[in-house]
Image (tube, rainbow, N blue to C red; front, top):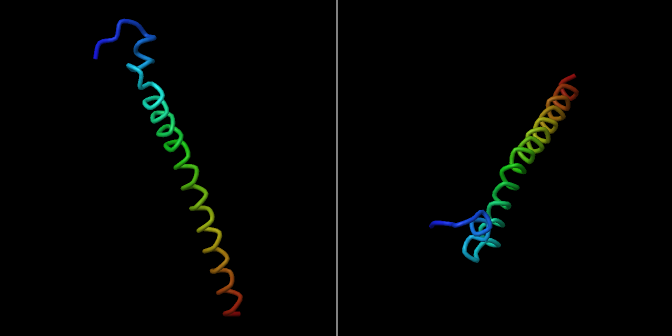
Length: 60
């Protein structure tokens, strides 16, 4: 496509709402995913540490 002005580019031929909202959702998910992965990792590590501590206490 060929746009004559920046306003026409951002309007995307009448589909701007769908195009820019999809870009926004994609960007939000790309930011959110590493945060959620770190939270899950720390939760798993916390559980594993508790299990290891419980095994040590049981063996004493």
